[in-house]
Amino acid sequence: MTDYTVEFVGTGETITCSDKQTILSRCLEEGIAQEYSCRVGMCLACSAEILEGEVTQPAARGLTEEEAERYALTCMARPQSDLKLDRGKYPPSIEADIEGGSEPTAADD
Picture (cartoon, helix red, strand yellow):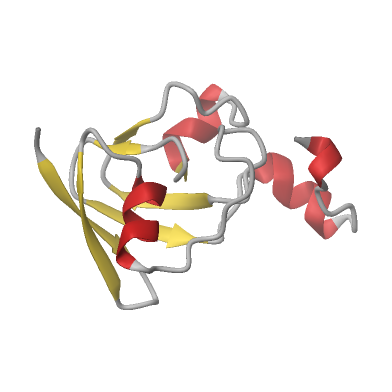
């Protein structure tokens, strides 16, 4: 088991997370208010843009392969290196829906 540092840019929050834990689970343990909903990699509520580093997230079904290279679903993502994440950043597929006035709902999960 290897521990990595996960820094959330713009918030001053940093956690240590093992490669066996999800980023969301560590946030919740540390009392960090990370947004989430379904916890199964589908709703994208816990999305964060990966600014530096790598994650593994094989069960992140809500992301395309291309999106999974740039975005982490913190409910599924496990660090593979030290990370810098920008929380609340969504992949283009969901940003288009939000900007068009069609906010995702629980029915979209």
